[in-house]
Image (cartoon, rainbow, N blue to C red; front, top):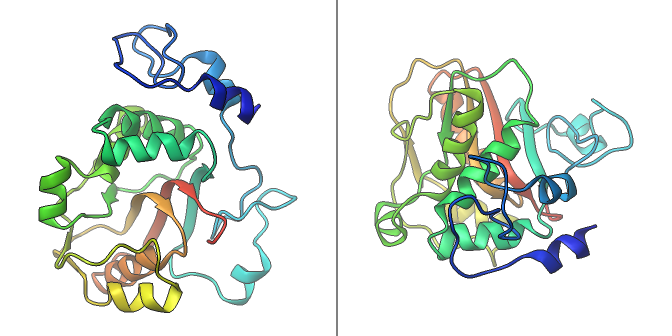
Length: 231
């Protein structure tokens, strides 16, 4: 199924009414055709705390039972496998902001109540956002908002310094790299969702969750389009 979907991925200009993946015509106001949507890989029976796929529903993995993460729930759309890497890469580096909208809408359909009071996209440093033109996490949040009508708060969190890319760092280096990198304004939320495009080790979400707990937020959920096998 994944091979067939990958073979249909097309690049080039996108016209109104075309599927973002295969460029074939799709339903009115839809971003993806029915065939591509039905073939997208999704996680089955994820652990509620880390999204690791398990054999049964609503079970917690052994790691989360021994050492639970600081957040209360994690939900992601899929593992970082085709066609998601292409969608996310084009979202971040090729100005395909609509890809974020699509990922958010797909993720929204995997979520269940109780919903948070607000979605907080993981912030970019101001100069990186200026160069890119937008924050990819915010674009995904807009797609979630389309379906769930949950407010998106882009002012709650701020990145204080431009940290090095986390891609090539190990867990200890990632933690050191992010120490003191974020700040939060005073807020009255009790239940929020942190949102990012891809979760690898969870270091960024750990740092932000602890920051939010210090601000008085009692329940933090972690949402993302994808998780990697390293997580």
